[in-house]
Length: 452
Image (cartoon, rainbow, N blue to C red; front, side, top):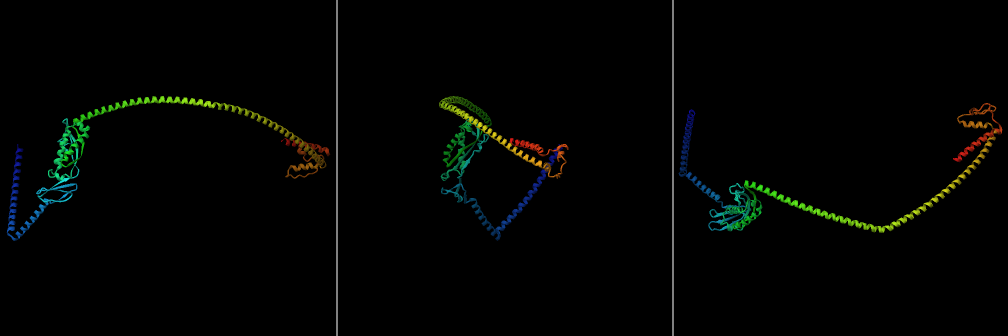
């Protein structure tokens, strides 16, 4: 309770303080307004009664008039610009004349002329309030469902008909004429089709029908329709879910149909391949049999021609064998005769060689005997000759002095192992054994040389 009283007290104090501030502010405002009023009254009195004031008043009046005229010209805009891609229609309010203005500057008399601008460029219209099923103005299908369709209408104004239609058409043709006409045609056409037709099956037909109806409808107002395009179709969520399930079932059924057709075609293909393989094997067997028959006939025909050649070949080989036999016999006889002649010649040669050797040995023996006889006779006359010859043959490094030996002694008796008391036989009786030994040695050496 105390807190409530305190709050009320504070609020009362704040209200009183606010009223004091407002009263002070109002007093100040009244004082300022009084001072301003007194100043303005004094200035007006000065402008009216003083000569200088009257001159200033005249200047202000002239300035105001000029400023008003300039402002009127600016506001009235007597000169305007026609942009590229536009056409201007100037209407005279007094006479009703209509003039077409092309790109460039144009003169307008205020309160007399009225200018309307029309774009000659291609324009598009899209009903943005009907693109979604949840938009404020969706389209309705024949089932009564709300759908959104993105529709784009491309159109252009006919420049030849604009001057004639400008008097009766509004300035904004797109908003006042084109858009209402398009909305009415779209809603009427969509209401004649089901959602499925709009969504997929009749889309192209709907576009053609819309274009066919809008073209003559808008052509009467000087509008040429370029194209009609249907874009995305927005369906209600429940219908979209059911449509997706239905499409999935249809896709499965279509897939199964194509699968069955494919299996049927595969079976037909297998049957055709089997039939073709059977025909191919039959043709191959027939061709192989024909080849074997042709080969057998060719072989028989070839054998008929080859047998005479084989017989001739056998006869030729027999004759060749007999000729080879005769040739070998003749060659063997010739070789035997040649060997016989060679053996006979070799025997004759050996005999002649033996005779020559015998003759040589005989002659050589006789010559050796005569030589020995001469040597024996020489030695018998000079007994020391043997010792000299032996000393000469010992070595050319040994100097030998020959002295008369002792009676009956020999210089090399010790080398030969003879006794000191042995004696040499004198005369011819002593030289004969030596000559005979020399002859026998020479005969053996000659015989060995002839054998070699």
